[in-house]
Image (cartoon, rainbow, N blue to C red; front, side, top):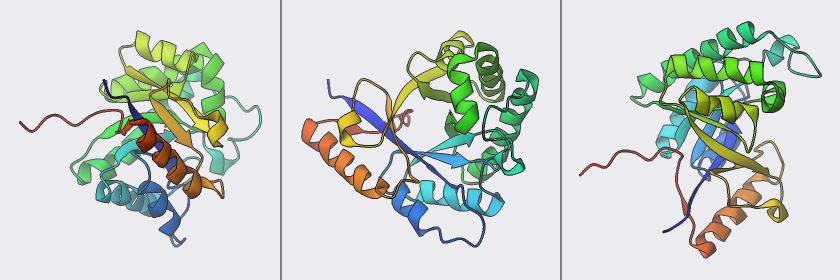
Length: 218
């Protein structure tokens, strides 16, 4: 059986009026896009543009959900209550969903950002709030996260499909025993790394596809 893997990257963390050509170049090289939902970055115009890019290049749409970084809460050891995280996750999902539905598409997955991502690896209560929010919003959304994390553990417990990911900053870190490979789009070498990664997959006979395959049209 042919191995299939997803390649994801973060986009949409800029603001209206900024040059968007780099995000478009990233999207052309991936299979799933993690779109900032307005808390740690992005605004309505950029979210709209990011969704447009993903639809244009047939890339799956994901919500990149974080703590309210633009209010100064993303850095350091700042923690929020699980109840607050629940509402913040729902809020951001709803924001992205508006643009996604307008294109006749659906949100494929959720990936967490920054401090929320890091804390959800080991904080079971926080991870449970995230998973509960996602499943209450749409139980068909995939929860994307690190191998053996509390996030994926509780995601499975509440009935979500979960997917494992690893971040690759150079090809020496490359592994294919996960569902998705994350490339940090804010690195200066991201485009080159994505091109090299795609070439390696081609040579190894590994197919590239989003986490959720579209239904057959037969």
